[in-house]
Image (cartoon, rainbow, N blue to C red; front, side, top):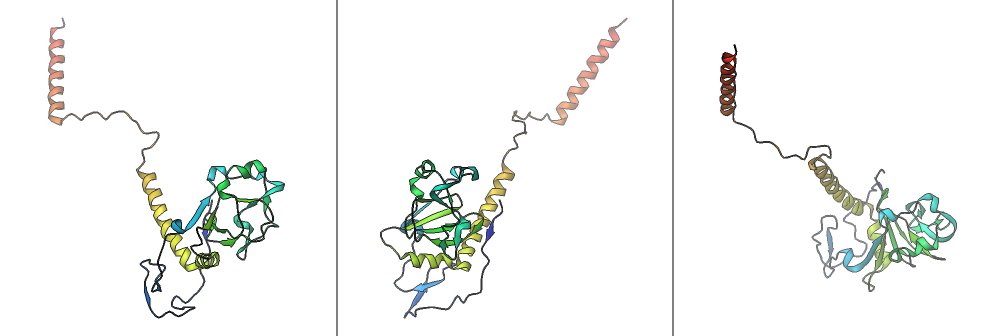
Amino acid sequence: MSIQIVPETPYAPARRWKPYAEYKDSGVEWLREIPMGWNVNRIKFTSYVKGRVGWHGLRSDEFTDVGPFLVTGTDFSNGKINWETCHHFSEERYNEDPYIQLKENDLLITKDGTIGKVAIVEKLSGKASLNSGIMLIRPLKQHYMKEFMFWVLKQVPLFSTFIRKHLKTFHFLFHHFRNSAPSPHSSTSRPRASTPSSQRSGKASRNCASTARRSSRRP
């Protein structure tokens, strides 16, 4: 499966939509400066983040014409979900994973294929869930407005830079462990200790002498 990243678009990093009296370094390379009084938190501490386990992904032969909606990355359209293009699937499969059953105003972001597409769940007319390739992000305890997080994730240069950085780490680790792992066809027998050359030559001389003595005894 090929991985793509949403193309970057020109933007002005120094542009501030609302001026603040004072700014400070956020301590995060791609985030840069933030207003004084703001804090930086990890999404995992402020949000409910879930996704479908890969091997639970639905196959095309499981799609139906009725039933709960199944949202994929191809159903994202201008930051919304196009419910008209969504497939449907069985109630049994829907109930299989309650952690990714969608609610109104959930944030969705693609993590496979075209990475970084973002959408907000709106006009949810029935049960819906995710297929593999999408993450669900739901604010906890009203830590932030969903629209704020939507536009943070929508900032293509910001998010794609983050993804590229971690993809490089992933590819490095993948190739490192793949190259260092023992081959399944390699022998697992214990290596034999090598014999010093002096011992080998001495043993060969004794064998030659023994052969010569046996030959001299023959009639």
